[in-house]
Image (cartoon, rainbow, N blue to C red):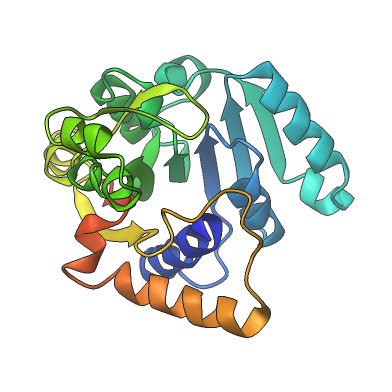
Length: 241
């Protein structure tokens, strides 16, 4: 659900920013399983994945090896931290930079965001997917976990589904940060408005229901006030210049 919604939103922003058919230079910081990186490579773009975890990098290399040769040639995988983009890339190297599900692991994201903006070409697109601190109490509240819900009103820190201590971000704060690093917010979406409390082991619905569920989530993710209480926020900034 998350990956499909983000893909649709990202494609919408790419279509709005770049000419049809242009082959883009994409950096995916923390690509994980490589869902978005491989999807963009299949669409013809040149993709660089920067992954700090050697185990995830090995899994991604194995996945890439199963792709056709033409797609493999369009993907470059590097081990590295998104906070050190200056050590790997020159300024203005990329047209699109993705940073999805990464900021939650950083105590302070501003330095990393500045580095990501630095490697964007003028007019380039910065795509961020973050946990929504303004809706942090919603999931535990709907599940009846009142202590966790009450704590979420006072702190952006929380424990994710993997059992890791992480943090959420507020749209207002990130909007100010993006403006300060020269990549002001251009568009934003909510992701997982209705499905955040669904269990990880729950089987996917049949095709017709899934189609309607995606339609409802996509509509809510771009409509106020629903998008403001989504579990995740997808923010898109555009590099000035």
